[in-house]
Length: 439
Image (tube, helix red, strand yellow):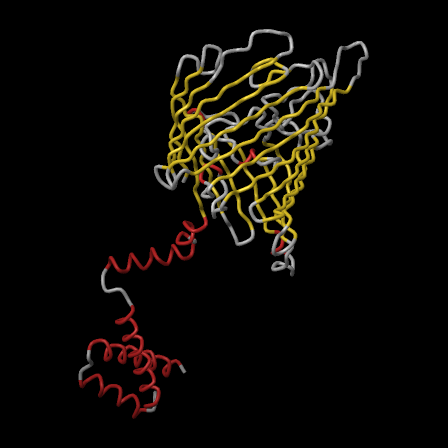
């Protein structure tokens, strides 16, 4: 048995030598002698020759001929195994930027005249699979590392992919993490890049919080959109230990193609002495002397597009001939009274705005907005850093689209405050000119 194995091994070596080096007549004689002795058969010799020849042809046609080719093949093999060739298609980078010159009147924010970078955001999106996406956005407004540095960090999941009804008219998405609360419409464009104007409305209602938000659509041809979320309720960036959570919900619908309607509701839950995650004109703190409080806000929004285009949002990039949108909201800050001897009063009020944009041509547009936020009764609050009962803002502007991604904007804001005491109205109008871009 050993003798036969050695003979077969020798035969293989000889066959390999014959195939690679164009064997001599002596090699053929040795093979024939082995066959004659009965150590191997002619069929085995022929089979081995055939297999070796196939391997030789394969190596010649497919194998690398140089060291560089061999290294390239190894790198390609490693990339396919670790997924580096697919990373670029899964990792997405987005951002927006705005910088310019701002000049206030003597009682305004920028009374010394200044160059600012009011908007600088960088967003990373990673899609580990076709069902989930992880989104993180960093905030470098005014060219500094803000606190918190991360605006939001959340996981989006297409929940319908977990069910057999993925292609049904019912859509369901979940979002969990630090997120922007889906309340109203301005909150999705309240920045100098995406807004038609460099400034926001007087109330600028919205905010970020940590929690879970579900959203989706019902229907096929003209669906109803909806959102429902549960969040911490306060604006703390640390761990929330309060079991009473905030709740928000929103419904949206297009009764006719150019008209969009939505209604939103928010309830902060009991906040103690913490600040609210939802900001109204800069006011997020409890009513005076309140040891516990709760904020409720309701808002209705409407928008109509004339000669509706394909791009509706962000508003600055809208390609409709024109649009007009408006909002009205009511808020109630319920101050819970633990000590009847304390002078504690509830705080309630309303706010609203009407905004319009008209595209003069593909490059130039004009825009204007009138907005206000007001407290009911004789209460006052520090709206936009001015203690007043009524705060009004009238904004007028012009935009020029340098490219599809970059716009130059100029505007003037007239701010009016009425504190109900007959005091002097601050002189704080604002002129702004900036260049904004998104990528």
